[in-house]
Amino acid sequence: MPIIQGPIQGHAHNGVKDVDTYRSTHTAAMVSAGKDVYEIDIPREAYINHGRWVVDCTCNGAGLTSRSFGVACCFDCGRVYTEIVFPENVLAIELLLIGRMDPTQRNWNIGETVELLEKDNMAFGENNGMDHS
Image 1 (cartoon, rainbow, N blue to C red):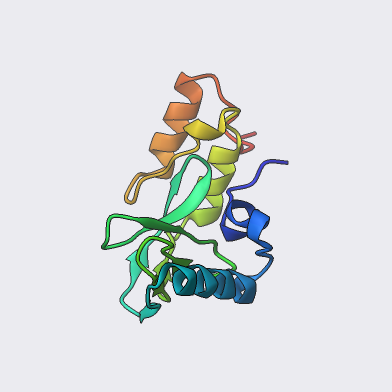
Image 2 (image 1 turned 90 degrees about the vertical axis):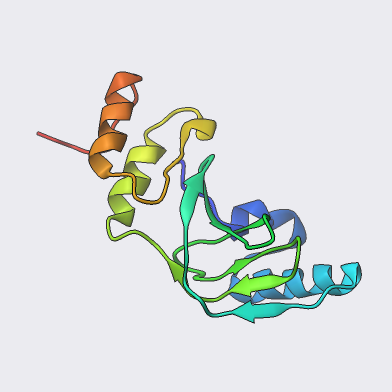
């Protein structure tokens, strides 16, 4: 079954399997690049791009996140965002996007409504992921 991906899927090649290995992989990459790691506790909103939970970084990079991790690491500059905000209706959003066959069409922008996602799914003949019976 498809899922909305996060750090485990995006960094599996580096052995990421939990938040600790995500953070240690990030730290090792930053040390190797000669960059510092900075923890940022200012809330950042997550969105979905190509079936992945993402948080934009102030450096114009981005980091993967997930509801279970609650952090996002930017491998471009070293920032670690520790206050990730997910939408209230996160489960409905994920369910609707998982119904889309093409992962590159699994996108949700901050502020986009569930109703709009449902309309988009219907317009493109995608499974809306929800049982309306």
